[in-house]
Image 1 (cartoon, rainbow over the protein chains, first blue to last red):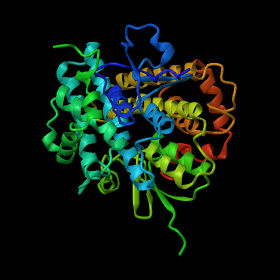
Image 2: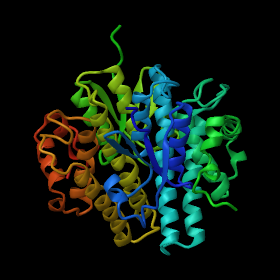
Image 3: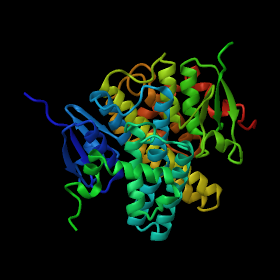
Image 4: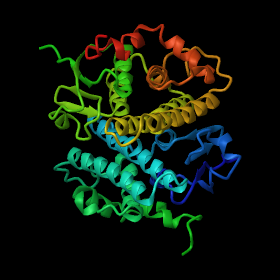
Length: 212
Length: 211
C-alpha cells in the first residue's frame, strides 16, 4: 500500500505556510493542502496546541513550526538539500532564517493580530511591522554585503532563500515596504520569482486564496 | 599553535545568551566571555542586528542562538543535542521554536518597549505573561504523559537548552507561576541540578550585578 501523502495545514496568506509550500515544491514532494483557520476550527488545537499554522502531518509524525517542519523535510526528503554541508554557509543560512522567523515575523504577527483585535490602530500596527522588517532587512543586507551569487548564499536555493521569499513578498504586498532600500534582497526577490517552485507557492496561487 | 578559544558575546540577563552558555558547557567547550551592553557602538560590526549572543571562532562570526548551537552541534558533536530519530528531533525543534519564535521575541519587544517608555510596566508584563502562558501551555500539551527525566528523553537535548532559560526568566523576572505547568516545573528542577546549567545562570555571569 502506498504511503499517504504528507498533509500541510496552512492558510493562503500565512508567510509561515508560504515557506513550507516552497520547501515541499523545491524537494518535489507531492502533498495534500488543507486550509485551516485556527481561530475558528476547534479541532486544529489537537494538531498544533499553539494554534498556529503551518503544521505537517506525515504518517504518524505531526510537526508544527515552519523551521521544525523545514528541517524535518530536509532529513526525510534529502533531495535538493536546503542546507549546505559547509559549516559557515550553513550557519549563515540559519542566521538569515532566524532573523526572519524570530526577529521579523513574530512582531509582524503580533501587529496583525493586535489590529484585528482592536488593540492597535492601523497606523500603530503598520509601524511595528515596518520597524522590525526594516531592522531585519538592513541586518541581512549587511550580512550579505558584496554577495554576487545567484541566491543568498550561493548559486543554489538554500534555506535562507526559502525564508526570505515569503517575508519579502509580505513586506511588498501587505506592508508597503520599499524594497529598493534593500538592493540585494530586491535582486534576490526578482530571481525567486522566476523559479516555478516559488511561483506555485505564492499566496495568490493557493486554493483558498480569494478569487478577486 | 594552539587553536584560539571561542569568544561568546553575551549579556548576563539575555535568555538567548543563556541558551548558548548551556550548550557550550554541555559540550565541555572552553570559551572567552565578552559582555555586551545595549549602548556598545562596536557590537554592530559583530552582529548587524545588534542582538546577543554572537560567537566568534577564529575569523568566523555567527549570530542567533539557533545558528550558533547548530554550528556547535556540527563542530563539537559530543554530546549530541539533537536525537537521530526524526520524530524526537522534530519535537525538539518544535519546542525550541515555540521558545525562540513565539515567546522570547514578544518578551523582548515588551522589555524594550518598557525601557524606551513606549508602554507602561503593566502593559509590558501582560504581554510577556500572555505569550509565556500560551507557549508553556502548548508545550505542556505536546509533552502530555511525558515520564522521561528531561523533555524528550533521559538525556538533555535541544528542547531543554531552550526551555531552561525561558523558565528561569519567567520565574525570576516576570512572575510566572510555574505550578500551572507541572511538567515544565519538574524539568526545571532537574536542570538546576546540572552543573552545565547552573554555571550558565544569569546571576553567575561576570557582568551580573554584584548585589
